[in-house]
Length: 267
View (cartoon, rainbow, N blue to C red):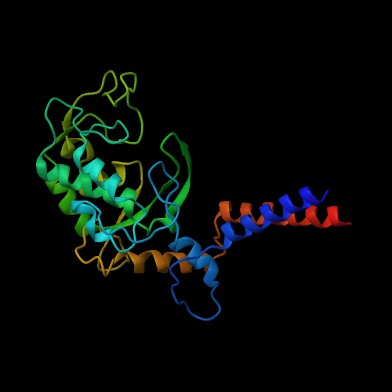
């Protein structure tokens, strides 16, 4: 009985910590739930190579350096995807011609954002796959950023207008599905917005830099990540609207059940 009680209380305490943990504290207006805001801005995507929570990583490789002060990736992860021809067995060069160096730079930068950004929390949704348990959906991407990305890739080739699905994986890497044809990004996606929003099945939503808060894939100063402010504003919006994540509510529910059982055992 005593051992069972100890186990239940310990589990309840661990779950309580897990559901209320916050690292970097952002000061918000009085009346806003600080802990809930911290939950959104101090978490990493639950993925194969992601850390649990963001923190300093001084040796991030090359294009990922701007995230060195607060990153969800490790230095070894960034080194690998800078140098490997594929990542998670996905090959950008799936047509007869390799993508151009300038387009490849953008794809690397996109990976830096995916693996390293600590600002995805307010847009994370469940998605059970081999490489992750969730994804970001509808992250606001600055139109100016999207326009340059599309311009640098528009003449490169692809056979798909949605890289998140539809591939033939029988060889272990992505192969164009039967019946598809390779054409330029410009022909497949038509517009910069169609490209940025469609490439990864809605991961990004293109917004006007001048009228809405938006994310940048490229920034230079590790001391100032401009995306922090965007994520914080969205976190406050979600908390004000009662948008605490289902995962967090689930942790509190399990914690409450375990605590209740421990009390019953004492009786």
